[in-house]
Amino acid sequence: MKKFIKVQAIFDCDGNLMPELIIWDNKQRFSIERVTDIRYTDNPGAEEPELRFTCVILGREKYVYYSKSRWYVDAKSSRQELSGASYTILN
Image 1: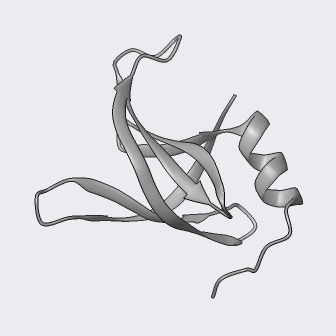
Image 2: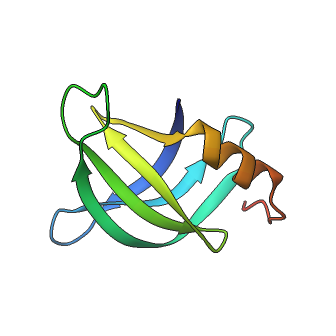
């Protein structure tokens, strides 16, 4: 299930879109420590290929997707791991 999220992102010098911070519904902020991979992926049910960013968040690899000008994560895996983890809320 898709969980749409707020993301702070930048365009680098080469014009590539790079996410930097995830903002959850309850205003919790999770810094993206690094992006290890960016690729187009064909998700089942998607009308067109989506950008999948492999990000390190709280020391764990997570997928963050960008499709049709919206960001989302897989709600099943990310919500439990991010919300249940021991973390520092960033200001």
